[in-house]
Image (cartoon, rainbow, N blue to C red):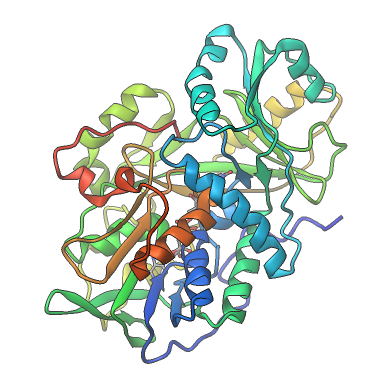
Length: 451
Ligand SMILES: Cc1cc2nc3c(=O)[nH]c(=O)nc-3n(C[C@H](O)[C@H](O)[C@H](O)COP(=O)(O)OP(=O)(O)OC[C@H]3O[C@@H](n4cnc5c(N)ncnc54)[C@H](O)[C@@H]3O)c2cc1C
């Protein structure tokens, strides 16, 4: 068994991809999370020169802090074809990278405490049938048999045995190494400050390590995308919420896959521990963007009024902090390099409830040894589905962001799609739902499943 890694990543970790950035590149990708890394990888496979700049370390923000669930279950109908493809790509990339990323087909299960909860599964069961997924409903006894020693008697569950898991903080850096071997120039500790525009189109990117000439830029900056884009007149109503996670040390196996009810979520890890989280609650810091975009978020808040808690202000240097500058120049320090790694403190009461909830569920564990805890800022859109599009106002600018709490699993699918979009190829999926203009063209937003 592999030991639990020192986690989360921090600025004191060695820079594994020092660069330097080249003077010119066909494509520049801003952001070294799963979206930026996999897009780079698919472009490099087509012999396109790619430079990926990352202000901190590869995967140091959301792409290593997530639960590691790769799920088709519970997906929005428009995302599902892409995530089905992503599951195939995960298998393929795991082989190509030649490293053990902890990929395993161990299933995802949603537990229902009541018949009312069971009824909520109906919508996805219909979507699953349309796509011939192996998703099925379990009765109460069958649910109990899935988890060794579980104390709670559930009304039943919905499960998708073919869903996957992987170790995010191993997987995304491994894919970055594969991308680098395929020729991608990755530059860590290198913030993109601004776009260089000529006659309304992209002609380069100003980074803190100089200018890279290019005709094509992808913004895949996670929680920072809105701040970067707004500087160039592209407005996306993106907000971020804090979510707390804990990792136990090795424990006897009670279930090999991932499962959640309304109170606790857990996933078996490759090292024999469990990654735990409190179910369904997150924290939003109220900054200028939160006020600016509040109307657009009303439907999501009304659908899940108690899912989000609020604090009046984000810590200094957060993307939507009151003191974060909204204006800077190519030759001045930008907000991106002021905060190389967004590393929110985990919520103490959340950690206690995680530990208590897991122990109550599995009373055979007299103690649950918590070995690490962390939090991440989940970047979300008002309709809980991402933006994957080209920017109409700036030729050569592409955006793939706002993955809304489920971008790890779908990551390689989005990466492949964006690589084809950049090349002008047939994408193979309908991306209308994910267009940028849906927030400004008067469309009624259709809510995807909750975060
Ligand atoms: C606690 C938690 C649990 C989650 N659980 C799951 C799960 O189980 N399954 C799932 O599918 N998803 C999950 N998610 C969501 C998933 O992790 C994200 O949707 C996904 O990682 C987003 O990837 P990304 O590449 O868009 O962004 P990120 O991983 O956030 O990467 C963006 C990168 O861009 C860099 N950057 C930003 N601006 C600049 C700039 N100007 N210059 C250079 N670099 C820049 C940042 O430093 C960052 O590294 C979870 C997220 C969290 C936080």
